[in-house]
Image (cartoon, rainbow, N blue to C red):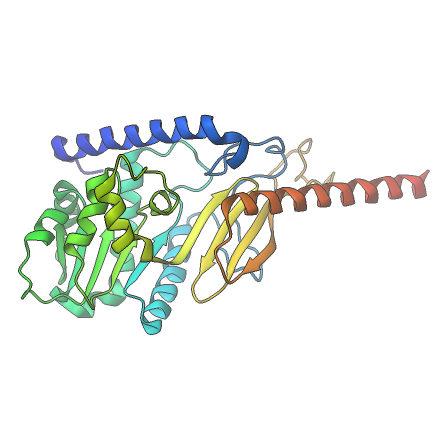
Length: 322
């Protein structure tokens, strides 16, 4: 991994850890109601786990070497559908190194940046009218070095804010904003009427969910009311306790349970050797985005129902054998 200039990167590390410290505090305060926002461990963690595997017909990306490529293909299709539908503010959200909980800030930035390099390829015919915007100038410089010669513009958000209104722009892609409040606020300053903007891994849920109280962040609240709340999550893949929430526009939102196949003697149960197979089941779909707690409750209800059915089937088999 190429070295970063320390000042900008270290400032984002500080913001990163402050953010996650705040998240930890909120989790401790509200864990009884939310039971973890990002799929943290629960009472049935040993059997029902937050992992991402393919499940027909849910069209979910398979964890493995092709995960980012599959996400990129699906996200590109979702964005193209969003552009056709006339959306001017779109969001792409997906996990980095799914299945891990120890992803560093550097890994998050690196993987999101390199994913974006391949994602923008279908849009490169726009040339210099395509703007890829990073919230930190050092990250923009690093992207320029890593990506080599490109025909589109790569810039930090400060540069984008200073750009003349006469400079042509047909598409803006903002990569990983949000490690401090000002990065969200600056999105409005570079936004151009009539020019689509796509945010990649900006964690806009923190804006929607009221993570930043209005009384402490009045400027951010005003930007939220004018702009940020209107981003359409055209591609959304996020863990929830017991499974995950998934949407690929124009498809419906899906609540998906992830669980181990615990059949004995298959190499997939807890007491068996070999690789455990993780299965998925679409529990519910909806046109409207489901509330997180509703998803957790639905997944828990389904997992308990499946466990009871499996136990009853096993008892019936034992009675027949006995």
